[in-house]
Every structure is written in structure tokens, then in C-alpha cells.
Length: 180
Image 1 (cartoon, one colour):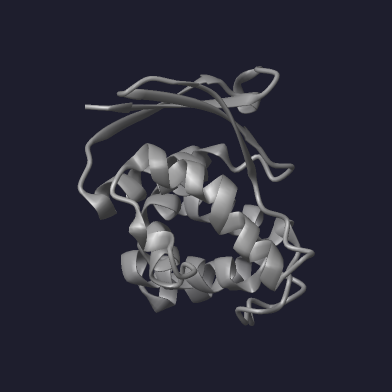
Image 2: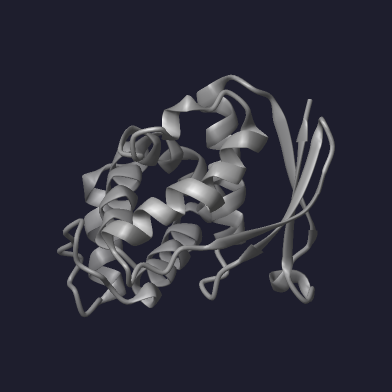
């Protein structure tokens, strides 16, 4: 996983619980990187999962809640560094299509080896969109948080749920976004 995610996770943790808490979980995690993250280096995905697990344990929340909170928080950070044209969307559904058709394409141009999630759109009406979230990292709860962060950024109210989830015995993760 790209270092930008780890750097932003560090910022997220320090903003919510302080630098001392970040240092404590790094010490406990005993990571090969030692938590010395830079934005352009690629790190082992397991380091993020381990850190999320430690945050969940220490804050008495589920890993799902930790992923969701980070996703919601980090959207504004990713939005601020999104490629030119990514800020032209004023609708959650349009933006989600743009993630698949434009933003991830631009990310791959900059880093052909980047492993970005894929969205396979399944159905759409004026107020409901469902898509298959495809990623070997299985960060569907993080994705849910990102969708909420997106909605908050552009001023739309949404509900996000999963009609199927690999973490709950499903064959895939299907996110359902409803405008409210």
C-alpha cells in the first residue's frame, strides 16, 4: 500500500488521540518499517491492518468502526490532492463513477503499479446506486467511510450499507448508496 495512506493514518490518529497514542501503537505493533512512513514508498498492507487492529483494541471499537472513521476522515485529504478535474462533480453518484473512470485512471498513469480498488456498478436510479467493491485488501468499511466523507464534502446526505459483504460470509462486497 502506498505510503500516503500510512502518513494520513498517522495524521488521523494524532488528530483524534494524540501523538503519544500513535507512538504507543507503533511500539506495540513492532513493524518492519518501524512506522517511518513517506508518501511515495510502498509498504506491506499488513502493517495498516495491524495498526487498525491495535487502534480498535485500545479504543474499544470494532475494526469496522476504525476503518470507517479513517475513511470518512481521509476523504477530505485525498480530495485536496485529487487530480485536476476531480473537483468538478457536485453529485455523489457522478463522483463515484469518476473514481472508477477518471481518478483511478489518473492514479495508474502516475503509478502503473498502484493497486487501486475497482467499482463495478450494478444498478442506479436517481436516488440509489449499488456497486461491487473489488479489492484484494477487502477494505469495504474504509470505502463506506470514504463515501460518507465524499457526501459531506459536497453537501449531500446519504446512507451507505452493504447488501453483501465478504467479512460477513458474502461472496463479494456490494455497497448501496442512497441519497436522503
